[in-house]
Length: 370
Image (tube, rainbow, N blue to C red):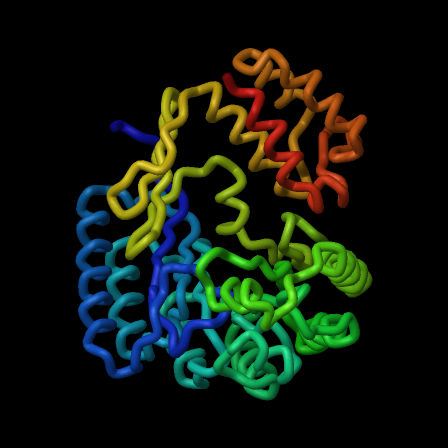
């Protein structure tokens, strides 16, 4: 269908050195010399060139190379991928280009070379700076490796992010707080904090069903998320999205694009593309349509996605949405009564309770669409 230009590009790398016990992403453990990765990168390069010829990359403002573990590809394959990108689109410093990396596969030379080829933001999958917790998760790196990776990244990258996980069975509040403080002390500019989610069919799910592992405690997870918020905000970070904190000016534009109704192109196995025009929004993954929304459903989804962001939506946006969703103003008034949102300076913003009870908040907004 004729569609608005894609503004964001996501490239999925479905390979890791090993699969973690909690992971349900589209990724598999492969040896670093596996020809499977060569073939996959060659195919990605062809897709990038094809989309460029079709004129689909001309308006891209953010690129995100995620996984899996992109750094597990090794420098030669990454160079091929980044070279193809640089020839196929305007990979200028104004384009935010993020790459995910894990400590066990990041090297000094990789840091230097990917920076030289246009990557300007590095997101490192740390999860914890505690060796005992890393062992529970089944991570392939140690706490020392994680510290070294962040220090290496900062040799070239001003914009370094780390992921941390809360609510891991066996993880104490002291351990979690120490990891948050370590990230701050290392000088990262962005921290993503996620509660551990047990996904069906994962090794963690099976271990819980067999009684070998305790199920994560939602109250403990909520307490840890609140601790992280307090510590990070004291250090000058602000929470701009439900799971993301940044120093001013270092918010992830790519993360934000997903919650702003921006059309995005996904390349690679299991990558989702969101295509839209004024009348229709479609998401397609591996050739299958996963969403097909009409204008009213689009407007409800835009309101819902915006409530994942700290800035929320303006009262004017809610009134405008009422043209297609007549119940929107009363629904937001009710959300305010329930303590899920607060209205400040003409904006409806999610409260801490709203974020913790996200399913209720988001569900009530989506239900506005007939």
